Length: 113
Length: 117
Image 1 (tube, chains in turn brown, yellow):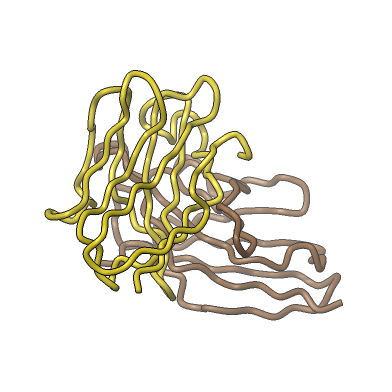
Image 2 (cartoon, chains in turn orange, yellow):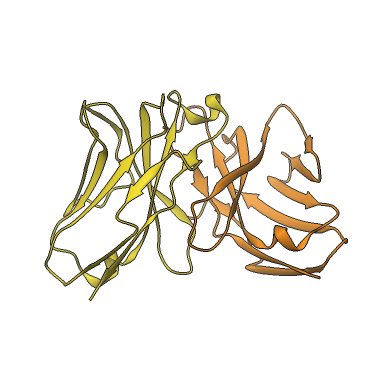
């Protein structure tokens, strides 16, 4: 039961353009969402988060948008840089759902110089 | 997140042997989580522990898998009688307080890659 889905396994973008990574979830109890970035042979590192009371959170080149009615969130990276090439995981948690985060299967982003 | 230390980074075992994976959380963190990533899949929650207590093990397979986080020393994920399907990357994460989202995020280690021959 994949409660968090990233339907695009890969994405290629030209350097300087916008990268948009998408994530859908099924559990309406989720109230906190995060994006993690993972390089090969390394652990995931936290990138940005958003609470369900907001619909947008911005941190430098990274912006996360949350559409609760559609149960959809997206990560925008602009401008994209070659160093952004990595696997991006979307994750969600629920306040009454135990202590686990539910992760998507990841989207591999390649930024072409 | 370099503060979460996992070892070994790579472990090779034959079917039927035991695998022990260790995790030292970041300094000041008393909450540890284990996640497993199978090939071509996302991270799957296994277990959440505090010192000397298992808080949530809803993601742990019912047999052969166990976890502990003793008062002293690292957290250990133990897999007995390994099978080929156990081959995966096992990630440990820690947080400052329980309900990691309150703390903001989990800090992950670099993972332990188990290969079962």
